[in-house]
Length: 155
Image (cartoon, rainbow, N blue to C red; front, side, top):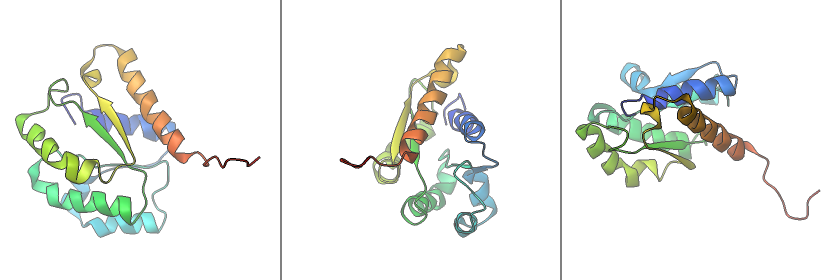
């Protein structure tokens, strides 16, 4: 997240849109327990499509654990993954976060994401209209991802 706390704001919006019960912020979850706990919750269906998991790589401290979790959620659990790509300069990311983002773009974010939502400075905007558009884009991505695929010739 940048200075606009984009990830958590989008998670709140999506949770409300999808009638979810839970937002799991993995920075806290990784610090408190193992990745297996989260995967077990998914397997036991304690987390549903409406629940949101936020992987906020905001420091080097949890980088390895979050990278492993991102890979496992994508490959093993088959969780829909959307990379919220906050523009480094326009989103006013710290120098540390810019360095981490650059390092993880090709090894984690693009490899283990189904979609990408690009944000420039909408999280810092003073107008609700710009931020509402980002919430709409995220809802649109999730809706598109959950459509039943069209089969040519099918009725």
